[in-house]
Length: 260
Length: 256
Image 1 (spheres, rainbow over the protein chains, first blue to last red):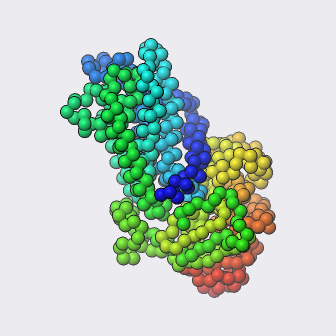
Image 2 (cartoon, each protein chain N blue to C red):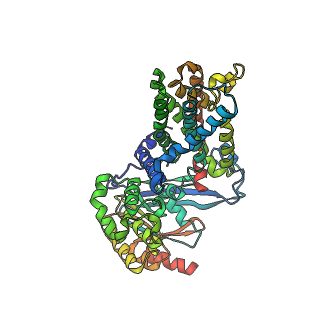
Image 3 (tube, each protein chain N blue to C red):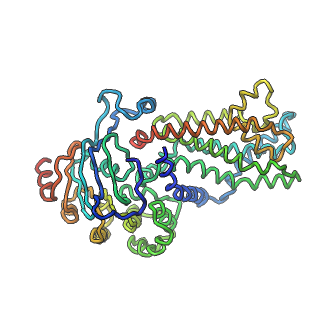
């Protein structure tokens, strides 16, 4: 394990390079360029906004509701995109994986951080809505890096787990797609953690995205913050995911390389 | 040996460049359904009897000294490419070990790192960095790489507009300008037009003269005789002869 970490350090500059390449490639030929990194969550936010303010009489979430939606949706988009990429992390560039001697973990990390870069690029939209609605941030804004860190650890763990499994089990892309679609409704996105009934909340917060999104939102809606308990649960789940991911990756790396 | 080589380190004097010891790798003959559960539980050791598994390479041992040029000969499916991939460290052995002293420039799937969406220039930058060239080293060599590849005006054109010959030429050119002391060459010499092939040959001569160690997989007797001082004959995944090039070629021709 120690050897792996040392190897991984030598792979870090290459990781930065691959992430930059991904960002470049994503926008190289597109007309709207970096707008794409938030157009999707933005349109989703508008749809939910209309559905829940015009059709239903909304009694969940906070005001301004659109700001509430977009903070949750952007964070969720990072998770769902990164998990969607994870099973293909090794196969997508298999020629490169088969030609460059790198610590293979780099390929799993790369999807997480290139999607993470996209997330960061999209954050100005949040600021824009805050300005438009003259909604000042709270001191929890300082905890934003912590939320980001927990989410990154979680996604790295899951990506390490899924990338070799994706090579060996063809169905995993479909399974992951299904789980993330369900996860959307099981995470506090168009409602808040505070809206979840007390009785189920201890179970609900086992979804690590619950605590993470709640902490992101505390930056704008401190009165709705459910406290550090759920955040702690998220951090614990993230660490478990990281350990499990590392173990599975180490064990499945060899057979996965043969199947590329 | 999962350890990575210290990047760009020249081979210390008196040490072998490559030591292959009892090397073997096992593949599954069947579909990969259920493979995941088996592999997850098996911890890499063989659980089932040999049914459904085969060894593209097994019990292979040899040592290569720095500066040697070694050819690998054998019919299709005898394990040549697998051997190269194991030395390159992109496959992990199930038995035995490969120890490589110094970095490896793998000329296997050389266009692998190139992306269609980016221009030739951007691709050169990224691929050379992927293989460990620093920005400054690249700046010194950039013009030579471009000259050698002969892509000329297409440098700022997206890679997808390149002809297949141009792609390989650019890729070869980048690889040939890396600093790695060990070159692994898998059939790439067979591509490109006549003029480019001749230049590839000259480049390889030049690299060998500069003391690089080379591993060449080829079906061309002429290439093997020209570059190699020694050859390995593989048969059904085993090393059957490790000798001079003429001797190995003679045995190979007789056997085929």
